[in-house]
Length: 287
Image 1 (tube, rainbow, N blue to C red):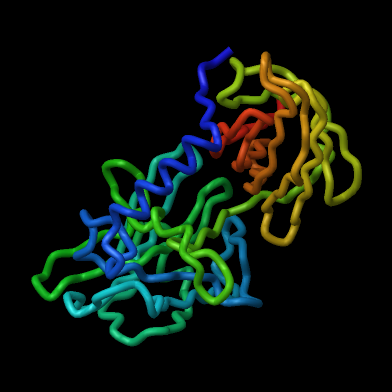
Image 2 (tube, rainbow, N blue to C red):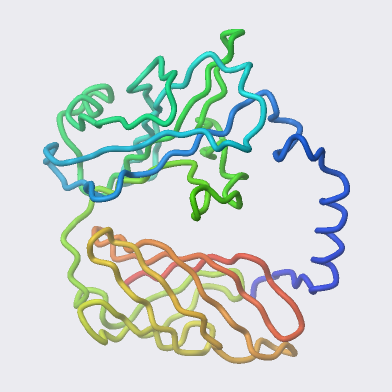
């Protein structure tokens, strides 16, 4: 068993109370990054959500906008569009692919062949992930990067709780380079990694062309809905059982399915009658 921490509702309320009283109402973001500007980036509806190995053709567009309540933007000179390419082995590099963005909102038509040429490649490779995130260039010339090459973290992930046009603020657009998704290849023995136990075995059963069932996840049964259009997954709210002295361990989440490596990853809240474990991540890998 791995060690995890239970956060009770009382502690959560206390934390929210402290947070609410300690924030500057005029600056709805952490004080250590007030000199930056939070730029929202989304994939334009109706455009292609995935890349395929060896293919650069397609309809790929992103839109950048600045939320009206984000704060003072007077320190910003312009924005850049940063591409972050992660190899199948997990190594990431970045390149600025569009510079001097000064008008918002702005839709950018992505030339995938040109983007890959900046990485010294001619086309995508299956198993890679290509992400786009905005850099902010201040009038001083300082660049506030959208992605940190040393930590691998995205700068504006902390703003994900903001609401923009009825949805959550988006700090990046992700294009996985996918293999053909065949759900039959996920059927059978799988290994699960999470924060509750050491790695353990479970079974995967195909329910339909868009749904898998995992038998043995935290001792219970969980349905995973598959979106074949963009290779994303969702797990409905499910009670999987009890967890030692805690009752009704309940999970849900969203994530991605990696057809190249036989991996399903999803993250979401985990709670019991006695409180919350916060956000947890599950990795399900075909054995």
